[in-house]
Length: 185
View 1 (cartoon, rainbow, N blue to C red):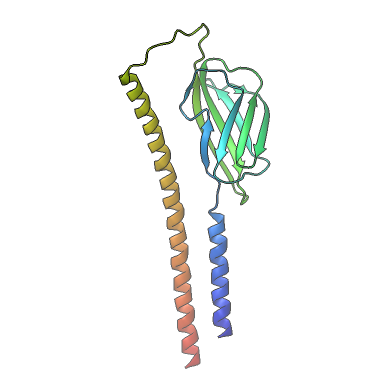
View 2 (view 1 turned 30 degrees about the vertical axis):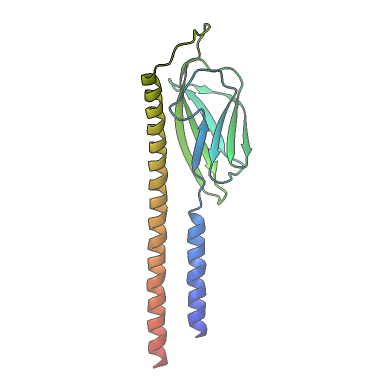
């Protein structure tokens, strides 16, 4: 009986370690948003994550031709990675590369892009027609669907791994019970 309890404790301990290993911090909202066309000058880039991130996390900004833009300071604030801009960004497409260290110690990386399109002359206010609003609403809905499908696939992948681990633990537990019962006979 002592061996049986020890085996169960070992299995539960192994399972708890595996569950903790899947607690990575995934990226959430970014400012500016992925694919956004920014029409006003920016002072910082903000990346929000689902979980806390650790020191050593980095962010880099590149122009459309691969030129690196130096950030004044990169601040790590709990679940945020904030890059302060030294100078206003010129009209161009930009790519943000990030590498973070999750609270569980695992490094994660990714990138997203946005476009700067700041008017150089005073902007004349335009009358928005319902069709323009519909197009913007459809674009926002499309972006949200892409983020939701990405999050769903990440959760499904993590969930399937957990079920595989549970299955393996169940097989080990059943084999342990069979072996222990045969030894008693």
